Image (cartoon, rainbow, N blue to C red):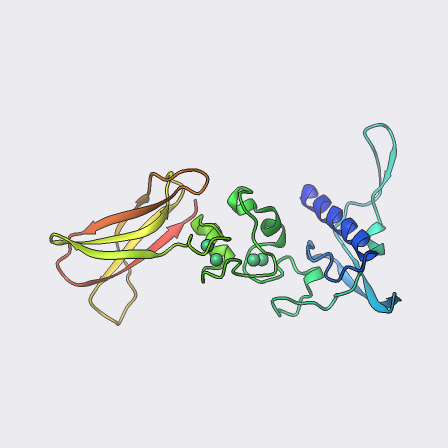
Length: 232
Ligand SMILES: [Ca+2]
Ligand SMILES: [Ca+2]
Ligand SMILES: [Ca+2]
Ligand SMILES: [Ca+2]
């Protein structure tokens, strides 16, 4: 937790410097603990407000070389031009929102790309960075690329293979995800809920291990299929 807080503080310090350079949307990454001041400050013909963090490490510490480091209070000096910006419209301004776009992934996870092992990063102000219909959180769970609209979890083929029905979907190989294939006989009255197969899928190449999964369903009735992906 301390590591996370320190990272936020570093970002806010950068934001304070950026404010002097006529920066509009600053400090949009926050730990969600602080508060916005009621006091407005006019600077350069614009209004700014202070944002504080309630979870910063406080007090005075001793540095590695025996120097004294002040750790408390400096965040009070951060001034924010767009204190009222609320990307996802949930009533919590971005400065205090741990998840600006409301996609279920924290701002920190999105700007570091931690859910994807740092291979790519997603946009903390866009719930579906690549616009493929799968939210950034869904792509994190499925292990697909949030910046590539061609990389998305879906059924791509249902066909007959002799007497069997063959179902194929886009999968993450290397046994990194669990897939559950569900089916139900020809009916519009219920969602597919009968589990007919579940396992991991091998194959693919690093870093994405993109491949396909295929199962053959020997049932003789017409069926609807659904695939579920589980991130261990
Ligand atoms: Ca988010
Ligand atoms: Ca996002
Ligand atoms: Ca997407
Ligand atoms: Ca994608």
